[in-house]
Each structure stands twice: as structure tokens, then as C-alpha cells.
Amino acid sequence: MLMENNSRTFKNYSPEEVDRFLDQIIKQVERMIEDNKLKNQEIILKDKKIEELEKAVANMRTKEEKLAQYERMEGTLNRALVMAQRTSDQIKSSAHRESEMILEDAKRNASRIVNESLLKAEKTEMEADMLKRNINIFKRKLRGLIESQLELVDDIEKVDF
Image 1 (cartoon, rainbow, N blue to C red):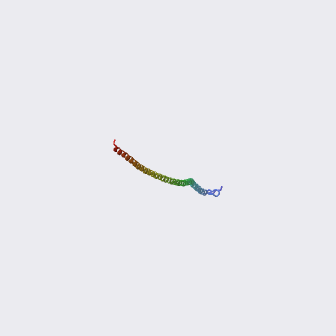
Image 2 (cartoon, helix red, strand yellow):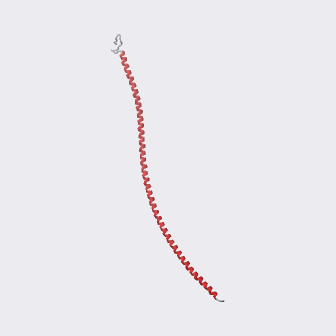
């Protein structure tokens, strides 16, 4: 080993320079370690952010699936409403036709009943007229019979016994 008298050197390296150099390296390593810690913390934060984003994406997919399901349900409900409206229209139309048929039948029955009633009224009126005539004939015959009986009574009074 070569050594100078005042300073200690080892193969032309001074210990202060080596110490300074090592101090610089230590500082750089410490900075690198600190940077590495910060980067690790950033990575952890970014990993958490990625996790949150993945959860949000999964949540969005779930919501999109639910939305698609609701849209399918809406389509089904719309088709059911259209079908119900058609059925309702058919029922209304059928009920309207049936009510018209019932009304026409009722008018025919009413017309028949009125005609029958008119015929019965005419028949009753004819029977009443016939009864009046028969009563008049009966009255005349009865009057004639009573008058002939009165004449007999008168004739009996004229006869002497």
C-alpha cells in the first residue's frame, strides 16, 4: 500500500472523497428508497383507484343489464297494453253489436206486442159492440114478451068469470 505522509490514501483515493462519494450514494439510495416508497404508495393508491374503477365498471354493467331487463319488461308491458287495448276494442265492438241486436229484437217484440194488443183491443171492441147489440135485442124481446104478457093480463081482466 502506498500512503502519503499527511493524508491517508489508498491507491490514489482519499478517504474523505470516498466518504463524500459514499455519502452522496447513501443520499441517492435514500432518495431512491424514499422515491420508491412514494412510488409504492402511488401504486397502492392507483391500485385502489383501479379497484374502485373496476367496481364502478362492474356496477355499470349490472346497471346496464338491469336497464336492458327493464327495457325488455317495458317492451313486454307495451305489447301487453296493446293486446289489452285490442281485446278491449273487440269486447266493446262485440257488446255494441250485441246491444244493437237486442235493441232490434226488443223493437220487433214491442211492435208484435203492440200489434197483438191492437188486435185484442179491436176484438174486445167488436165483442163489446156485439154485447150491446145482443143486449138491445134482448131488451126488445124482453119488452115484447113483457108487453105480450101485459096484454094477456089485460085480456084476463076483460074476461068475466
